[in-house]
Length: 280
Ligand code: FE
Ligand code: FE
Ligand code: ZN
Image (tube, rainbow, N blue to C red; front, side, top):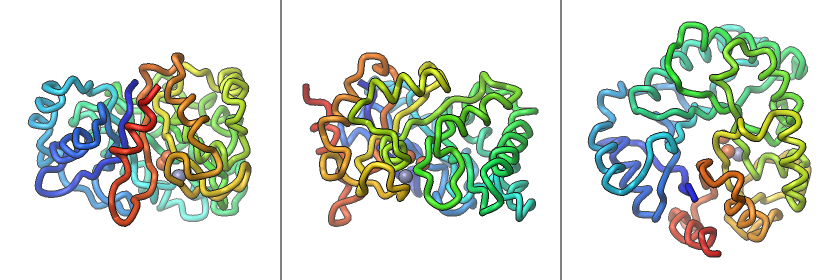
């Protein structure tokens, strides 16, 4: 089982610090942002202590291909009302792909974007155009994993069909995959009590081989609430049993699974949650 959590990447140890943090949780992978998730100021990846991180990973049997990078959530390729914002997202992602490649990682998670009340059709069109431009000159083998969204506000990617529209219009399809977030799909209205049925639907529309990463979160809200508020494992509406079944699904044995559950009393819950989920 490839299981880890969100970890921080910050001074002085950067990526090396992230790996140390992951190991302290008993994880064999992790997900990081290349800087603050809420802004786009970025240090050069030269400073990230990448080689030291990689050698620590090797010593502990962690594989680089399971490491996940998350793009900042302020990036919005779908903002047709402020084209300069969408264009900024394109330029940022071009640079972000280079940082991910420098780190040796292969998966960059991206929220598709918000159509800012211009309508989903227009939003999706802008995402397609933006992604095609981002990928046009990039020769790396980093894949962009579009995340399934809860459908909060004007979020695009709230249904598998919306994600399929993006995928079908991408020129370099080999560079695109998906991130299946359990809290988001639940909040979007996919009943994970019947995980097999949801996965069958996903397979028909997007292809399960294109799931590059899972985000494993419980939800503070009932099915279809369109809220996107993560809850600790077993404490929300999805519940422990379903999440446990998902992380143990043999079809996804080699797919990294990342916890993004909230801190409890300003303490990371990941060590305990990873232990709970690993138990047979
Ligand atoms: Fe996300
Ligand atoms: Fe997520
Ligand atoms: Zn979320």
